[in-house]
Image (cartoon, rainbow over all chains, first blue to last red; front, side):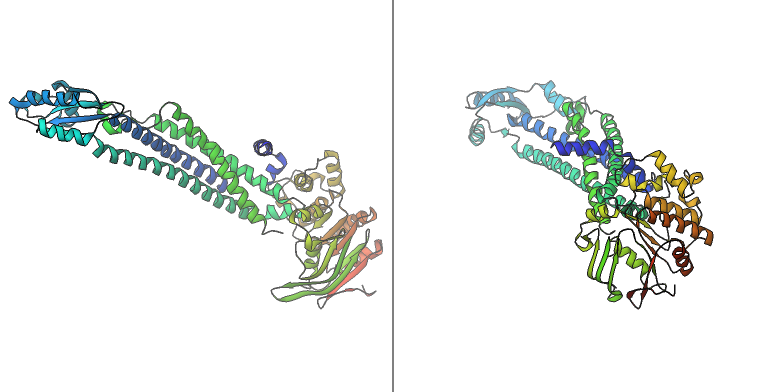
Amino acid sequence: MKETLNRALALMTGNPQADRVVPPSGYTATLTSLTAATMAFLAVFALALSLATGRLADRWTDALAMTATVRISAPVDQMDVQTRRVIHVLETTPGVAFARALTSDETRALLEPWIGPDLPVDSLPIPQLIEVTEGEDGFDAEGLKLRLAAEAPGATLDDHLRWRQPLVAAAERIRALGLVSLVLIAGTMAAMITLATQASLAANGQVIRVLRLVGARDAFVARAFVRRFTLRALLGALIGTALGMIAVALMPRAAAEGGFLTGLGLAGMQWFWPLLIPPLAAFVAFWATRAAAFRTLRTVR
Amino acid sequence: MIEFQNVTLGYSGTDLLTDVSLTLAPGSFHFLTGPSGAGKTSLIKLCYGELAASAGKVEVFGQNLGGLARDDIALMRRRIGIVHQDCQFLDHLSVAENVALPLAATGQDQDADSLSELLAWVGLTGQAQSRPPSLSGGERQRAALARAVITSPDIILADEPTGNVDWDMSLRLLKLLTELNRMGKTILIATHDLTLIRAAKAQTAVRVLRIQGKQLNLAGADL
């Protein structure tokens, strides 16, 4: 561990003599910075997407897991009777902690995003909704459905499972795709930096031949290239990450009306996660460059 | 210092050198001659491990080059100064930095006074801060010689060091190499320039090796 830290420190501080032997400019170094910046920018979005969908899945799970809804579709003159029966059934069902009928204002608020604000709830045959909160042990949904069918034929129990599961599964899948994207981004960056390093090594064939001729070890030659490309990748990734974080921060905040889209982005401590991208990019660049450099050096005696 | 034992060097199935045996004693001065394409440059490259023998054994400083790892070859080369006809430099560095490159590449400290003295010795004080592409052929050869000797190597290998320079510059380079030999360095110069060899014989004790018909022989008094 100590040796690794010393190596990392030596890489950062550098060896001015080794740094001087590689020509200072070149499109490959610029290409590396650009690639790292682009990949870091995309990585921030992949990370934000992954974290946000994870958060969304958790929220949906938490919000819907302990609740159910009973919907009563009955003629207007029977609605109050059936509502009282359903409430009675629910109150006497083991595992139901609380049940209450939604007021017309609450029903209007629920329908407003889809139908608009001036909904005449009272004059429309809208089902009565009853919010059910489960106790810690939960209730027997199948038994409750049978009781409701017998005592209030117009009542239907919706335990949210039918649509909660696919939503949570979709959110989990998006989170996994985000993580896969991060791995692909890292792999692509490694490939691009490897190509850039190999192009740079090929362009500096004379430098390598001369250095070998005067007795330079492979590690000395490789270090000059590795340091340059690692620092270039780190710089590019820092810029890309900063721009990505700014872009995520500037994403429009969806209001309550935004429904499912609310909360896509980063929140709280999650803002620290993108800060890992630049050192990870430098790590990927270090190993990609090192491998490419030693592979090329082995072709020169 | 350098010993070849029955060395054969082949390219693509064709032997360039066959059964070559050679011993360069410490402090000796040898010329290597022969027609173009005879294998002079290849023999020089065998001496510092850029080429590997197909058969036989090459020993430098008592080490069999065939068994050396890459890092060990690098360490061995630090004791050898090499001058090529094409004199490759790092064009983005100054002449002074190029001359000091063996020190930089091996982690040794540079002494500014010593570097100045060396540049003065090869007559390049005025070109110290120039870039290599701006140097003439003779200046490049002298810069390459300065780079070859800055670490005070035990052996100096020079491949056609006077190939691109006029006669006066050839004599000047020869004088520098003769001075190095008097300092105890082992010198091997590959050249097809017989006049240069005769001029060297007039200055110091040299032996001449000739490659002919893939074989290496000691040249006679005809040179």
